[in-house]
Amino acid sequence: MWQAYTPEVGAPEQLVQARILCETVCSQQSKIKGSDSYPDLAHMAATALGYLTWGVETQRNRYGLGDLGGWPLDLLQIWGKYVSDGHGANLDMWLKAHLGSVSDGMGFGYADALADADAWLIAKYMKEHPSGHSFSEAVKELFQQNQRQRIIRFYDERFGGDASNVSEAFLALSDGIDVGNTNFPITTELLCRAAHVDRMPTDPEARLLAQAYAAFIGNPI
Image (cartoon, rainbow, N blue to C red):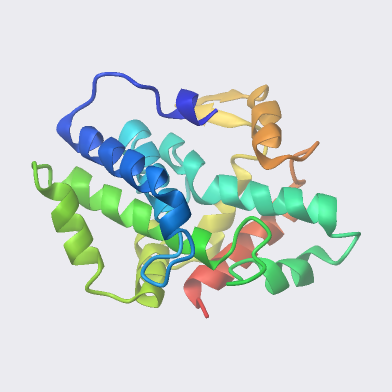
C-alpha cells in the first residue's frame, strides 16, 4: 500500500532528498526506534515523503492526499484498535486514555503524533523554501523548538488551533477519499484495510476521534 502511495518515479530534488531520508532512517529502524533523541524517525520520514509526493494541505478545515499517510490514517488506526480491543468501552473515555499516550497509544501514541506534526512542518517549509538545502534548513529551523512546542505549532498552523477544523477535515474522509471535487466511496474499503477494521466510524464516532486528537495536539502532555 505504501509503495502505491509513494510510487518510485522520477522526482524533483526535494522529493529525492525526502526519499533518501526515508530509506536511510527506515534501514536503521531497529537502532533508532524508541531512542531518546527521536521516538519514531521512520514514521516522520515516511509521512514527510507522502506530503512531498502528494502535496501539503494548508486549508485548515480540509484534508489533502498528502495527509493520508499522516494524522488521518493514524486516527483510523486507533479507531481500529478501539473496535478490536475496546470491548465496548466509552469511546470518548477510551481515547482520552490512549490517544497520545507515551506507553499505550494503541496505534496513535505520542511518537506518532509528534512524527505527523514534524513531517507536515518540514514538508511545508521545503515547499515554501525550495532549494538544494531546504531539508537541512527545515530541520534546523524546526528543532529550535522542543517536541511539545512543535506539536502545538502544528495544531496552530495546520488547523488554526481550532478543533472544529480538525473535525470537519476528518469527517470529510468518512465517505471515502476525495480527489478534487470527486468522491470515491469505494476507497473506504482501502482505508478500512489500512486500519485493520471492518467499518469506518460513523459521523458521531469520527467527530469524537477528531476532537480527542485536537485536544491532545492543542495541549500535549
